[in-house]
Length: 457
Image 1 (spheres, rainbow, N blue to C red):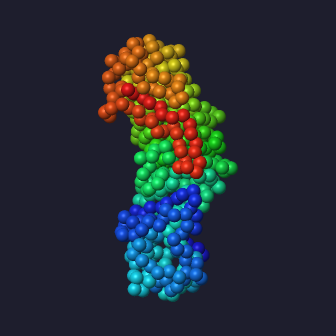
Image 2: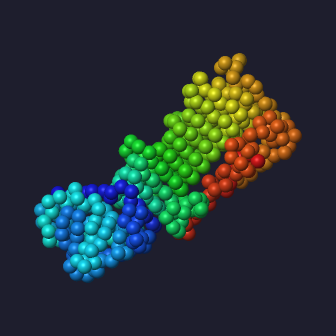
Image 3: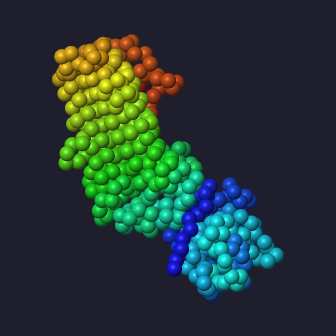
């Protein structure tokens, strides 16, 4: 019977569009020190095939090469998959990093083999591979353990099946772990924020979220552009998303605790109940929702924009609050649930500007600025700043520019009324949407959509 053990924690895996799922794909240099990272190449550094390269077990965590390869200190920190090819333990696969080498005896010590290899007999033959990147996200998360990171090179990845944690399938990020895009070197994503991982559904059918949260603890996704293609019901439900895009979900784009600098486009369903962002707790900040059924369903929100959402633009849950958000061309721009505390939010060009528990609301060109007679607790009208001119630099541009203009009765009046609107709590011009609407696949495939949306000064 085949058994399978994941890579141990605090390791990294690498995925590229030109990798191979039979490669090692593992790097743990921070644990094992002084090695050379061989997980970035297209091909495995060494393939243990039992013929050209032969290797056998010495103990449950030590292997010895008998022909075809000479170990070196550079091997440390690299890792891959190892399979017992003979004897009673045949078919026991494990993934782990090389923690030390014995050049005198031509041996590796490999972490994480202990469990599946307990009781192994010395001399049993092994197969496997070390080095080289993986090719699919599902294979990477299938090998992932907690407290670990998967680095995915920017490019276009198309699902081959809809089974999470399978080769060619969608990823399920494990507890306390990260999946992050990179351009050239591991960890460089925030220096190249438009170089994202573009995830496409191919011909797969819906199976929940295209990037799924696994386990019960924190997961983080950074630098992904997920296209559900009107088939999958959700983009992602990881605990935290940063600089990600979700498109064309047949439901919600993001169902996260926290979202930062993310965008959702065309997230709709037949019932009109889909949201670009549906955060059950935590905060959504500096995000953008466009042409969704509803823009944001928030516990807390700061400096978000909902544009062209037919239902709610910004919906604030019970006992929560939001500030400095914009709803433009929405059905009901701003709605505050019972016992909330939201202030300095703006509704423009909406059917209904504000309803419910909203304080110090700013309004322009809504069919009805405040609903209710009077609204709940009279909060929505306490007070409403009624602008007489468009406050934005260019809301109809491609991309729309929601920075304040200096027009009297528009942006200039709002800046006098709420001087923190432009600067917020962060010094300097707030051009927080400068990278979120364009994804470059790192050279192999490029998808370009409208560029920066700007809010503030």
